[in-house]
Image (cartoon, rainbow, N blue to C red; front, side):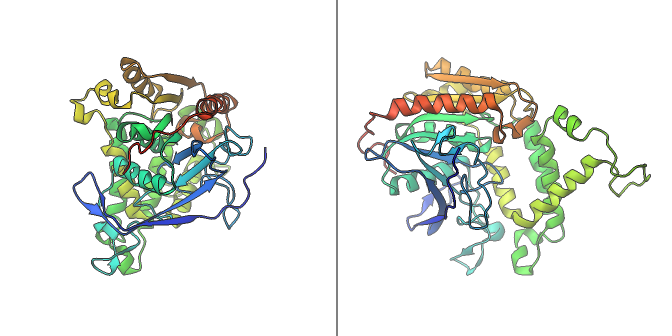
Length: 386
């Protein structure tokens, strides 16, 4: 399959304040995005890809440094989301550290970096910001919104907040909300960051500091939840780093320890601590059933008219198949068309990023269906203007 080749990010700035779910608002913000493929004359073939925690707008192709996009195996010519058919948009969310307005940028009210003063953002806020960008691109209705993990939550939220502006929702390895255990993991990771002496209450930029120790631990905790027990056992087992035990409580003894430390070190060099806090909080807050007395079926009544593909992986214990089945039930209760695939894969939560032939085959087949569906579709005039 061909590569998209080198792609360049684009920037779109919005002067009008964006109302946030917290009651605050943010104005004069910029979103960074990339596009792949060609928008057709009917403007009916656009697909928005929503990113997860530590990703961004660079979904596919190569950036200026030659790095492949985080979902390059999914998006491109001849790939499941085929850019010979679709106009694909990858957007970096507010609060990120990859170009869109976030804690590292200057707060116009103070002339200093936002830091910990950056407003709390939610999945719904991201979706509303994405809707403005899509509208500015002249697209009235998306053929599909696609995302995995936290990106899948955004895809779901599109069908609840802007149901007329999207035809298909493809949500992979996701959930209708986080379990108490998942919130607990996020909280431990956040505590690692905020208790790092270099955090300085979130205003570490002014001190020329970076809370790397906290970021390392946060990433190590998170990374454990992305892998399956079987996958870790197969890859590392109890293999020692050296030939013999060193009988030390602080140095690395097992290969899995070295792997986690490597992941933590790498993450601490490119990710922002305040962004980590914001994004994990957005994960915690997502719960569309909350405003419906905890009734998920009632929440998805708003999504009538959309069509869904949900995909889960058997060894994903962070967003288990049972959570996807909750979503399937809510959709079936509303007689909303839904396809569901549960893939027997050993990789845990990270499976949604990997090359599993069955998974990629499901995605390819569904996007073939989307293509047939939208080929003659005419977007609803003026639907869902922001």
